[in-house]
Structure formats: structure tokens, C-alpha cells
Amino acid sequence: MPRDCTCSLHVSRIRKSVRASDLRAAFEKFGKIKDIYVPLDYYTKESRGFGYVEFYDREDAEAAYDRRKEITVQRKPVTIEFARGQRKNLKVLQVKIARPRVKRTDANYPSQTPVANRTPS
Image (tube, rainbow, N blue to C red; front, side):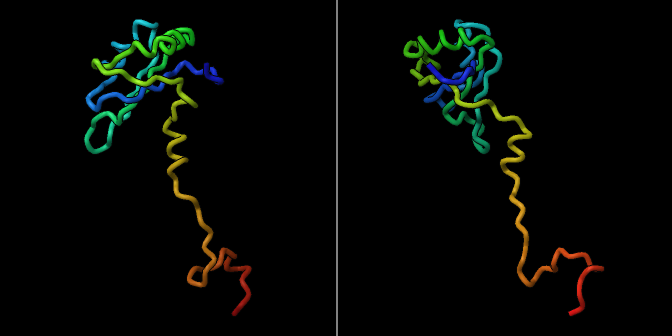
């Protein structure tokens, strides 16, 4: 049983052709689904081999997890674990990929001292 109180399951070992509707068909019998996310490869637009299923109720997620050995997606057995962390939103991703600011101190760049406060060279 996981330590955090997430209602999301990480589903791996899925085929590249799997879409959200395929995961919904496999998991909706366990309870009401809040969200399904299948990351796609940027270039091929195919599944990256894993996805997430989020339930409204933790008990429904636990029921699916308890029967994980019986669940198949497109007739293929999958691996199911409780998701770690929360789904990232756009703001978090923008901060994560932002380039770090580097203070330039070499001689090719002027100092950050205002012109009025500089001493003549």
C-alpha cells in the first residue's frame, strides 16, 4: 500500500497504439474515473509506453490495484503501481525547463554598477 494519499495509478508496459479510451475501458469497472493521461511521443504521436488513471475515490484506485494481475489493455498484461507525486501543471513545467540565470563576471561584459557610481579608469 502506498504512503501518500493519491488516487492515481501509473500503468506501464502498454502498447504504442493505446489511447485514453483503451485505458478507460479497462479501468472504469472499478469506479468513476476523474482523468486519464497517456503521454505521446512528440514526433510519432504514439504512446510512450505508460499512462495514468486517476479515480475520484481512493477506494476505487485500491480496488484496481488489488486486481492488477487481472487487468489487460488491448489484450496485453500491464504493470500497475500507485503514482508517485502529482501531475505537473504548465506553470511547474515552465519553471523546470527555464534556463538558470548566470551572472556574467568576465571582462567582456560591463559590470552591473550603475554608470553614475563608476570610478573613472
